[in-house]
Each structure stands twice: as structure tokens, then as C-alpha cells.
Image (cartoon, rainbow, N blue to C red):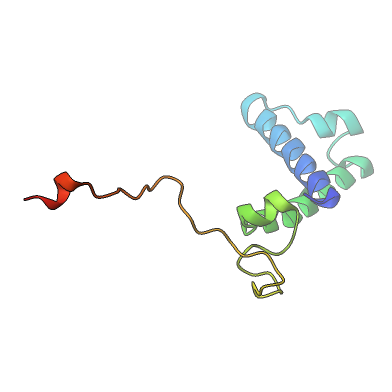
Length: 108
């Protein structure tokens, strides 16, 4: 995950925890720490949390493949078009096994 996305995700989590405390205990931690909701620092924190939410919207549409490799390309959308020079996706399923026919199977 990119650094910007990690910072944005951390700020979104902080904002979510703050909203949880507001909902459960009617206690606004950000306002308490920075001098009230109208204080400049509190408004900056609220703005950063809001912008972080916008950045994290992209996480909803990111595939698992791209998240694991840190690449914007998945194994199906790489620009090398899966030629002999690029990696090809593995479609084999390790859970399915082919059964060998025995003499008992052919005798009916």
C-alpha cells in the first residue's frame, strides 16, 4: 500500500473512533484536544479526516491482486498482454484432482 493511502487510512480510522465516541459518550476528542470545534487546529484535523475519506474511496475499487503486489496492474490487466516475455496467470485449481480410471471402472 502506498504511504499516502496508509496515512489516509489511519486518519479515517481516527475519525471513525472520534465519531464513535461522539455517538456513545457525547465526547468529541478532537475538539477537546485542540480547543473546541471552532478552533483552527480542530478544523484542520476535521478537514484532513474528510480528505482522507475521499482518498480511501479508491480502496473500495482496488482488487486483491493489486493490493497484494503493490502494483496498479493485476495479472489480467498487465500491459505485457501475457506474451511469452511476461508472466502468465496460473489457472490451475489445486483442489480438483483428476481420477485415473482403473480396470474396475471399465468393467460394467
